[in-house]
Image (cartoon, rainbow, N blue to C red):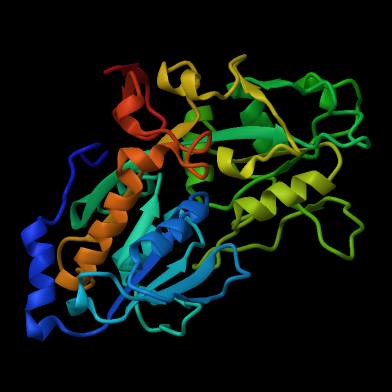
Length: 363
C-alpha cells in the first residue's frame, strides 16, 4: 500500500509560533532520525540549516551514517537546545525500528530513544509493515543505478555496458558463478555482485523493479584479503536470519572500486564518477529519463513518523520535523549542488507509479 504520495502534512505558522510562547514547552528537544543513508548528505546539510540559532556541536563527524547535531533554532526559544540524531543504518530497518519502538545507538549518547522520524524510499506496506500507524511526508524521488568496476584489472567485465531485468536478477542470484560474457563482457571469468542488505531501500526498490525474489549472492572484501572478493555467508539480520550485503552505499561504492570484475547497485548519489554506470534495458540514468518515465529504477522518498500510540512525536518534535521538511522541499534547495543530479523533485515528474516497483504511467 502506498501512502498518499504528495499530500503534505505541515504545522501552521501559528502552531510554530506558539511553541515560543508556551512556558510548559520550554524544554530541550531531541529528534532521532533513522533510515536510509543514500540521502545522508542532504540530511546532514539540512540539520545545519535548521539549527540556525548560533554555534552547532557535531558528534560523529567522521561517520557517514551515525552523526548528531546540537544547537538552537532562531526564533524558537521554546524548543530549547535541539539535538538531531541521525542513525542511518537502512531505510527498511528504520521503518521496522520506528514501528517496534527499538532504541537507537546515537553519536550524542541518546541511546534509549526509538526513532522519531524515518527517511525511506521504501513504503511500509512494501516490507510487510503497517502503513496506517505512520504519516508520510514526501520529499523527492531517489534514482538507483547498477555500476561496474572501471579499473584496468577488470578486463573480463570491460565490455559490460547494459543490464536487462533478467540479467540483473541472474546477477544478484548467481553472482560469482556466471561468466562476464553472459552480461556482454569479453572474458570467461565470473562477475561479482556487491549489493546492499535487506535493511536498505536500494535493495528493496531495485529488487521490486527487476523482479528478483531469490537468495542474494553478494560479495565484499577486507584489508587481509588483498581485494579478493569474499562471498558474504555470515551477515545476519536482527532476527539472526541470513542477510548478505553491505549496510552503506558509500562503503559499497568503495568496494566496487577495488574488486575486479564487480558490479554494484546503489543510489545515484553513491555511484560516483570513479565507476562506470550501466544502462538498464538500454536506457541510461538521467534526470530527463526519470522525469519522462523511460528509466524505472527509482523510488519515492518520504519522511515517516508515528501518528498513533507510543512514539508519537511531541509538538516540539513535530516543529523540528516540519522545519527540516520545509528546508528540503523548498524550490530554492532543489538547485543546490547536493540535490542536483542526485535527487529529483516529484512535481517535475510527468509520470507516476501507484506502488513500489509498480508500472509507470502518465500523471
